[in-house]
Length: 392
Image 1 (cartoon, helix red, strand yellow):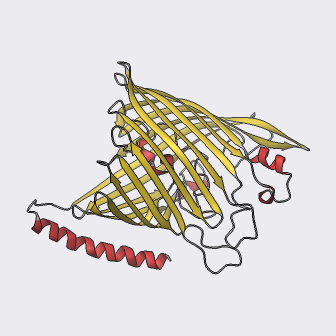
Image 2 (image 1 turned 90 degrees about the vertical axis):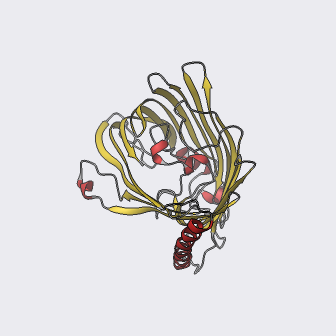
Image 3 (image 1 turned 180 degrees about the vertical axis):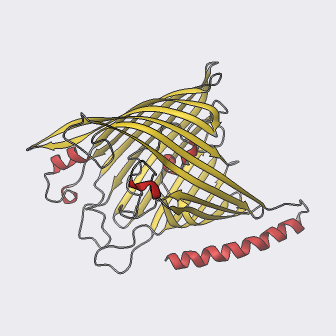
């Protein structure tokens, strides 16, 4: 499958150069191909309680652990070969560079995407692409409002060891996109590699992801906040499926002037996710992805005069697994152990917009832990100070 995608991508690249020549000669506009290079870096200092994290837990949260790391260090390149052809490449660290043995982290290719736009209603993208059925999963790291991406809106696509075998939300495939009604109605639908190794199977179906959105005002640029500019109200829904895996949900994003001081930003989403209830199905995710509902709300207010933005955040991964998804564990205990609630608040200083900014946040994560025969809820805290450098 990857070989097929490589052949398709090579064919598109060869075709793009002929388009560049044709457009330059046909319309007389004198289009000049362009090439840009940019960088994105996130470095942070944090103090967090023992047990904080998506997959970690501890009976005692008394100990606070300090740390510092270069969290992201990306080189971004783009080339506009013609009015219709575009290439985007991006690198990333293989792991955060902290104070321990991981100082020697390497570099990997994170994005490798080629786009060809036939018209406003149809564009084709191929390669290693950011994939999601919801808005938060399609945002870029350099334009977030809160301290980082959500934990659970899209929790099974981070690494090759996760059920969907992705790389930080990227998958290999082909995606179609376009718009209508002057760009206010937009769609995305694509076929991707997804999980390739199912136990006892020699083949695997493709993963299919789709999304439809409507922009009631300005066209949504998928920024975490508009920094006090424009009026955006976007309502969308999407789906993601492969084998017995199903994900579907909706999201609402709004950024609107409120009072003379600035603008309010709302980012909200709901997803239903399940790996199916039959572990014996041919392409089953039943033992990997329990049935769950995930809710997200982010709310902030941007003060234009001082470029300060306080924000609050709520997220809940509510596991309500079916009996065939819990293995040998009691279903009620399984749900309590796997469910997690996140509360957070912070303040951003966009002293140079998205190019350079500073974020201070506190996040509390509550999850179930086993104590003897009982399951109890325990909260873990994290204080995070992050500096962003972005030029693109």
